[in-house]
Length: 237
Image 1: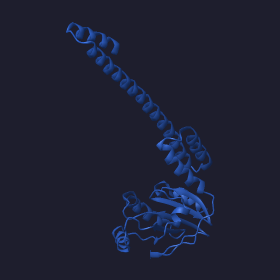
Image 2: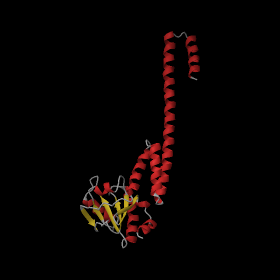
Image 3: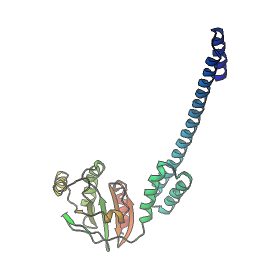
Image 4: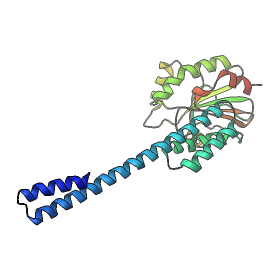
């Protein structure tokens, strides 16, 4: 099409007594335009390929999450490793890497929880019994949304297992902010401050996050909203 356009334009220029320089300039302009269009076409193909890779990676990621929710961690990890091998350059693969770290934590020894301050309640002894750890921050809207559900779970299971909410008080959060948050949301489960070592030990890279420990071993790690009563009942057996 560009060649046809060039031919028609040249005829028009010649008919209008254009100089050879005008024709050469036109030829250069059309060549540049052609190269630009080719580049755009190539870029479009590259974007399409990237989108296809993201879609395929997302399918594997979602399958892994479903399997993890069913307690099939080995199968979930296999999906995530497949995703990393095939689509490691995708954004979804980065999320998959975080999930793989969480799943790989299950079955490992649990690090004892050390707090520099307890706002209410006691620090659980993760070496015995079942404990639920929730990592949160006052400024996090997603954490705020989970508070009622965690409170409900605490009230249902507080006689059977231990609980603690852990904050690093990041982004300038003060003691007063935490105390105010606890009062505003009517939180009754234990809340403590940690220095980040617990977050590192439990592979926390996003919040809210939760872990369940049984007799000194991590038995579950994920988003608190994914932890069901049925799962907790199973851990308590």
